[in-house]
Length: 406
Image (tube, rainbow, N blue to C red):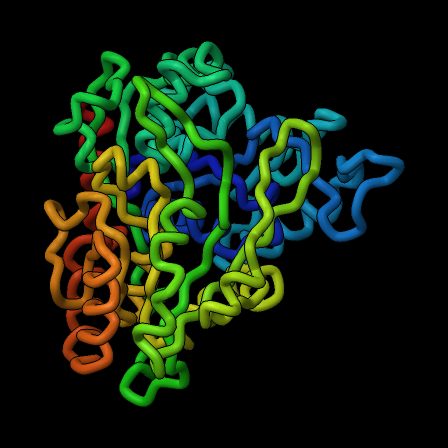
């Protein structure tokens, strides 16, 4: 594939989720990775999601933020920080307005694009982009994506959106081996999250400023799914299995930067975070909207951590998906070891040094103690795994080559 021969569009939620620093990196790593390969890359946010007024709260019960400027300014700032001025467009659904690229520029780019990478299925109407030669769907929520399209409340529209694509990828590298998960009669190519390593390298782990295990998470993103009498839950269910862990590994510190759920409308699902139980059990809880609200602070929070400890969504575990998170990959790229709940990723990643998977309480405890006892070895292994498996050059080259060949 000749360098600079492709015009690529990447989709995402960077503007809509402007208070979630980690969400920005979910999509930035794709955009910056494609740019790093030398291709002509653009970011288009056309999700159809109406922005919420998270800061000032609802006006007479209306949570919609009718002012597009905070979203537009945030997105413009992020793009500018990475030399992507004039390379983005944002659709503001409440008034059907576009920002960033002019309409003429946007239509021309869509008309001449070779590939659109629809990350996490964030396009509301992918069929509107059918002039593009290859529409690529990247499933970042394996098990939930497949079950939702097969039997979820919005299965019809999910199927329609999937049908608009040509090539399909999933982070669920174990899905093909699990007959309980519907494949939707599609060929699911596997991939890993691309990480632009240069943006995450940190030499300070030799004299660490952080002394604790941390993670950044939502307590629950949406309701538990039930499929063929099996329940596929969220992180809240899995976390409670390890609630007593801080007492067992003391004096090691376990900190959670938590995105506290907010009820925004009758369509949104949220559960109360049992802060009193967590704190009484020894967990240090911080507000993610304060410690890592943007891409700068999110990266710094990870780099100032000693390592990560985290559970996965219950659906990933029960579904034996093989999923491995973008967040954990960023810890690895920063030279921070991860002790994370095994979703089946140990079959596709080297586990034991740098990445330690656990299924039981005892394994979680042992993983933390192992990292504490042999930190430098695990930190070096973390960097090596990031370079070998998550380097955006390797991941995106393979993804684009596969997409263009299918």
